[in-house]
Length: 179
Image (cartoon, rainbow, N blue to C red; front, side, top):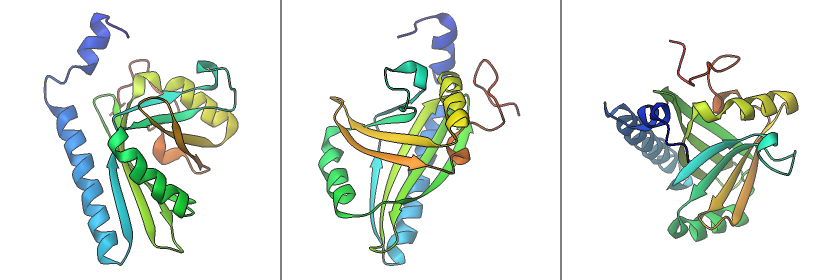
């Protein structure tokens, strides 16, 4: 883990903006889920414990890049049941960038069974350039859902990946928005 002053300054939420953004992400997820439920859908909402971008250079498998997100163990069985019982082959992304972090609701859907799984997650943009390069090189992106012990529960491919990535063609060195 990086314990440099720059890292600590970047990740410490002195203003509360990151905490507020995370709370807003979860609230948005629940509001979207409620609308789906009103429309007759079965919806599962899950908050992830950690998400990190990975590039082809970050591991031994050059085909493995994108986002790795960790579900708490108490959500894993529920997620796996819905994942195995449905063809979650469509997705929508709702996102926001705050203080160098990308906040997302990734919704994976099965339109035939009207089933949706929503994952609230966030990742550090400073860690994203390698992932962004891998995604642009391969013109696709993956999200890997794992448990805390590393058990892989699912892999989702995203052919339309722009909503999952930082805004702009390339990130500034500090990962912060160019606004």
